[in-house]
Length: 453
Figure 1 (tube, rainbow, N blue to C red):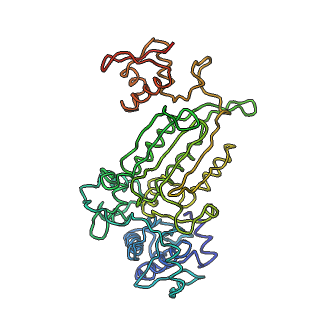
Figure 2 (cartoon, rainbow, N blue to C red):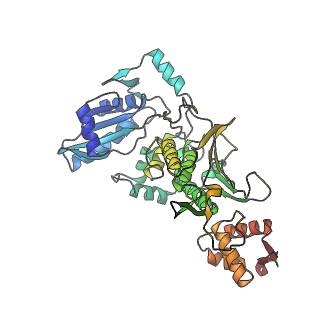
């Protein structure tokens, strides 16, 4: 939050989505206000500090974090942000909208109404529970998981990128963020975000990436199964699409405008949304990312959560996995919590592309993007012989090498593309053989590839 935003809130005064509280000695009141906002539509709390710097700030920061964790269930929020408005120091606490649980404080349930935290009676409380009756399993302890299953170097890297830098041990930080439960056992969220081998506990928590050369599924395709912790899955799935989609240009106003087939921020947003919002309680089904010649499909297990529907999803907010969503936001994968779809629509419109299509299936959600397609002029050398094929940049390099040298080996291809794995090189060459472009000669270490005449 910026100082101008805080100044505007202070000028408007307390309301349904904003409160101002004093620092220290008001932990219960702060926890009650955070729970009340979480049970409504979210909002902001400004905690007025006694001093602009020093130990008072640090104590208030710890109290603010503890206030959220003292709710039942623990309320995992973005870390408090220091703010100075007209010479006065504050901590700004943001409560995102659309949280999946009903939160209690001191054994009672509150909801923000007007300027007050109002205790909920039996009927409105029942309605709120019914509206939020589809919580995920991310906050549950992963059976059999211990601290040895956490990659503490990854937790340390996460801590170092947070601002302000949190104090305490790495275990305390991970507990605050929901990655450990009260007994310091790893939760599913902790394992998924920082686990050494998350698939040991959730085998289907992976992304299947496939590229088809045509507009339908067929026997010729390139595939990669992405495993590991969720941040690494997002990076690798994004890299798969970036390296396999077409790149070229469009001619606009007699100028050449270089661009990829799909806007890369929209590609990332689609993958992040699938990872953050999928239902991890569904076993035996992974996220599927399918790249066709005319479209990109991203399928996520789990139908729309809570009160969200296809009709209201642009305006309503609901986080099935609030811990995962918040940590991904801390890491920079999410620009602003709850505004991913808005951002996708704006970016696609800016590129002159159709809006993403959202379809609920029997057990999940599919997002379809249409790219520049045939309007894209392939950025290839004049006279490139394989322009009609759906090739990635690595394969184009391989074919150009073969055209110049007459043959190529796996080792030579690896030297052309040092940033990819040997398995990716093998799949690229196998795909060119399947497309009848190359012929494989020899066996094992003596294998090389030549052009098919």
